[in-house]
Structures are given as structure tokens and as C-alpha cells.
Length: 331
Ligand code: TRP
Image (cartoon, rainbow, N blue to C red; front, side, top):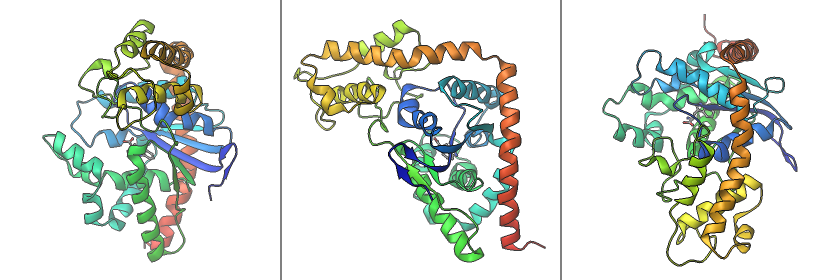
């Protein structure tokens, strides 16, 4: 069981990220920062979920190249291969094998209700069957490692709930086989919003490049993006996401970056300019060391870490998959 003490949850933590472009501030503050922090108290397994990326059309080689970059990002951000396992989903074949059993335990109706499916099926011309069964593969990812806690951004809450439901349904039929995980969603910062359209989540596919801060952005771009962030006309610095979404987002960025809270940050400002400048400085303090580490990691190092991670992940996944095979009593 995941238990929370003052320093955070304990037990096994598992999470995953799709290799679809460079990591941005929203991913980092919304979820990945917790992966790094949790390394002090949990036994962490972190996965670049390359197979999930094929649920929408891809060119040959595109996902592979992005997988290496995502792994490099995670290492630069602070996933420490000495303390955690970092690996690529397709290197451990048990993921697709368990995904089949998860599809068999998932109800059509429950998959149809997934908001990520609804959004993605509307925005893609070709809607693959995999886009629909995507949460079953995600459930397999999590359940293969006897995971206690899944640190994710707020948008993944529904998928983790789904994982719990299918695990419980599987257990009801086949015995106490799968560990039922809990999600961990950070209280603030889970939703860092787009700097130009603060009603939308910060995302890599934003309408305007100015809305998203990427870890690969230069210092001057980061300062520019925060300077141009959309605010409002009443000139008052106050944390009120409903009526002041832009300003509240800036306060949130500042607070999460510094590990404080947005309401008390607001007390320190009477104008938008200084708030933007301080938010930029707080972001740069995070970004600078990450960019430096990113440059120091060559392809060979990253590949070696992933190969070792796959070996360690496979050992655990094999154990759980064997348990599942035994429980369903294949011939
Ligand atoms: N669906 C997640 C996302 O889009 C990625 C993901 C796949 C994941 N498998 C996972 C996250 C397992 C947590 C645990 O961000």
C-alpha cells in the first residue's frame, strides 16, 4: 500500500510518458517533478511509452528517435538510474501481453467514456482501434510492476481510475493477483496553463509557440514568453483562476517552481511586470541545470542506461506476468 508520510509516498512508484516531442514546463511541473522528488521515498520505475505513441499515425523511425530524446530529457531532469529504473516500454514484451488480458477485463462502455479518447478521436482523421484500447495498455504498464502509486498530471486521473477498476475486476475473477494502485496528483501545478490561452492546458501542440515553455528554449525565449504571457486589464495581482486565469497561471508557475503556494506569492506583487520577471527567473533556475546535463549526455550513455533499465524492468514484469498466466490457468 502507498502510505503518505511527511516526505511523500512510499512503496513502488510507476509512471510513463509518451515520446512525442520535447518535454515542456507543463509536463515537468504537472507530473515529472514528482517522479524526481519521489526517488527519495519510493522505489521508482519510469517508462518511455513508445508503443502508446503508435496509436496515432507515425512515420517509420519517428517514434524511435523521439524515444531517445525523451529518455535524455528524463535523465537530464533528474531521473537517477542508480535509484530508479528508466526503460522503454517496447523492450519489455510483457506490456503487450498483459494489455490483452486488460482489454478482456475492460468494458467497451467504460473505454468509450475516456475523455482522452474522445478528444483524440475528434482531432485525428484516422481513429485507430488502439486509440480506443490505449487505457488497457496503460493499465498493463502500471500493473506489471505491483505499483502502489502512480504520479501523473491531472489529465491522467481517469486512466488511473480505469486501471484500478480493471485490476479489481480481474482480481474478482482470478484471485488476488494484481496490486490496485493509487494515483498521486500534485495539489497545485498539476495544471499549468498555456501562457497565451490560459483556459487551455500548456501542451506541446499549442496553437502559438509562445504559449508553451520547452526545456530546449533559449534563455531569451523563456524570458520573452513570460513577458508576453496574457494577463488582464484590472491590474491587480490576485490568485483567482476563475476570473483571472492568466495572472493566476503566472502565480502558479512561480509558486510551483519555488515550492511555495500561489496565494501567498500574490501578496508580494502589486504589478504584473515584476511577477512576470520573477516567474521567468524561477523557471530559468530550473531550466539551466537541466539544459547543461542534457548536453553532457551522449547517445551511447542514454542507450546503455535504457538497456540496463530494460533488464531490471523485465525481471519484475516476468514475475508478475507469470503470476497472471498462472492465475488464469492457461494450459
Ligand atoms: N497516457 C499517459 C499520458 O498520455 C502516458 C502513460 C502511458 C502513462 N502509460 C502510463 C502514465 C502509465 C502513467 C502510467 O501522459
